[in-house]
Image 1 (cartoon, helix red, strand yellow):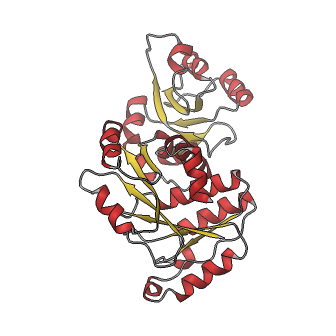
Image 2: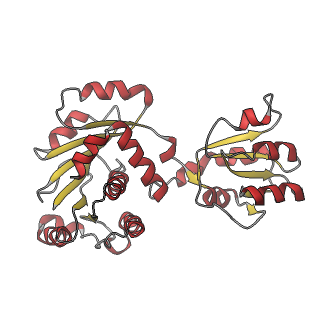
Image 3: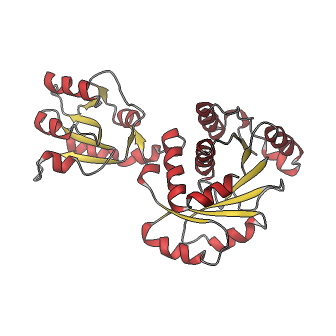
Length: 315
């Protein structure tokens, strides 16, 4: 059974996101896969391991062993024993390796995830990853830098993906939005885990409502509670919630329509401008550890790495 170790060029490179996406891809391909995080400063409370455990549980996969302690890096016997035990149960073991690009000496294939930065050399990361390197993922690349990054890797014989920055990986949920704003649910909460990618202000818009609000998916609309016309116009398939601002009360008709269409209504007592300004720190709550984002990253891999190369990695 195969082992695939993921290494990153820095903390936050996207190792866990890649691991989750590969597990999604393996499950879709009918392969039984397992995950092990080699080391953690808090083995019993590791958020990455807990998230992957939930993901694997949703696939009917094996439980995730507790990560090793950093001190175990000097003696890989325990790490190798855990991996060997998992290998006896599954087709593929994905190992969440070091943040440094140099992999652990545990055998198997290595995939490098390099978070793009003009200050971080992709070629240096590739060199450090060693002879077992089987794939290179350049993550969170600004759109205007994708061609430059691709040129840096043009001579590689390995599968390469230069993945652009994606709104889908920077989303917060409707529930996080409500908590951040200190808002009240007008109706019973629904779709609290739905992703929010964009905020739309419903004010004195020049376009017709359906034209204005039907442009972007996963949008949260912010509008005054006294504007039921805008609220109705924004209740389209692309609106994941409506934030009502001000001290008034929403009309019964709006509440009935929101209930029927399952559009969450969140009310805050601040005005629209202050509400919009208070969103400034919301992206600090962004967390890639959601099943929705695992599926989204799997789609990015399929798009930018290619289906054949993806299957090659998980084989």
